[in-house]
Image (cartoon, rainbow, N blue to C red; front, side, top):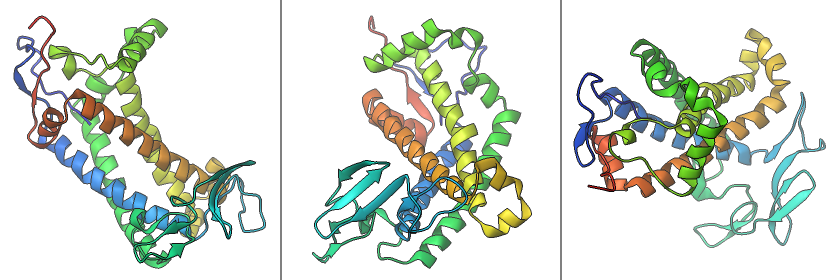
Length: 281
């Protein structure tokens, strides 16, 4: 997540100039969390393979109606959401393993940690990195409040909340009209909304719903069950938050490719960023 470090007293930089864009702490946080979230996603998919159904409410077992299910018949794999069923043979439910044999697990081996079915080991991976993620989020949020990053770069200003301003940003993004020059150092309203949603809703929500699925935490923090409507509802929300994060990452990577991957990667590795030139330059 970008953190602008340009001195406000200095003259505005021009397109083509190389400026400092990311602090070292921001770059480390970005790459550590990218690795942590990838490992948590892949180990979480293996945990899901043990019971590939999601429910709402307090309970959830094979006879109960699931709002989402990934399964397989003798002929094909399927994804079922409510009453809608989509064939997913070769991707979900039924797929061919690296040994050439057909498998009938929800997610294929290349998408899970470990690749072979092992619920206990997947839980170890998941819970170990969950603590790393929790610590990272708390430290980053605290530091962002202290150094002003949250207020200065992420909180929208009054003018940015107007429907006209938001609609203008939506049209610019849809047409891939990215900001140039010094404007490329600032977030627009859509970026601010996306980053705030990740920082204050999706990541904390994923951590809290994960805690709600722990019997030990339920006994200590009974309010978690009331907050999320039961362990099964918490499990459903946990996966919803996770796949909303996946959607965020997909859009993030696409925008990096559109903006110029070499320049964007350099800024997140070295902290240096070359401002896109204005049209008249």
